[in-house]
Length: 90
Image (cartoon, rainbow, N blue to C red; front, side, top):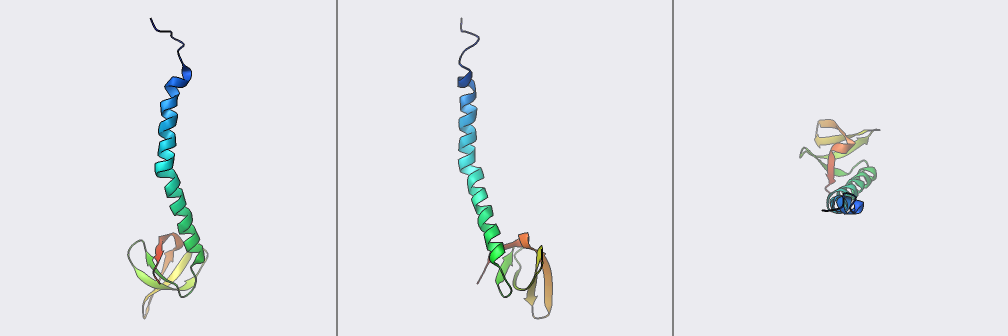
């Protein structure tokens, strides 16, 4: 018969290894990508050309606390949340 006490680390070690693999394969790269996106958002200024997550291209004409004013046509301006800007397209 086996001993009921056994090795307590033997049962939890696979769970720890799965978590470590999950961290390095999914969580860490996503955090790095998020930090790069935040840095890009902070660097945007008036006159920058951007693409939103909805696929709208425009030029920043104004910067407010939590949003940008984009000119998407000669007479069309829209306000979008800063988080809605996907990329700079200069």
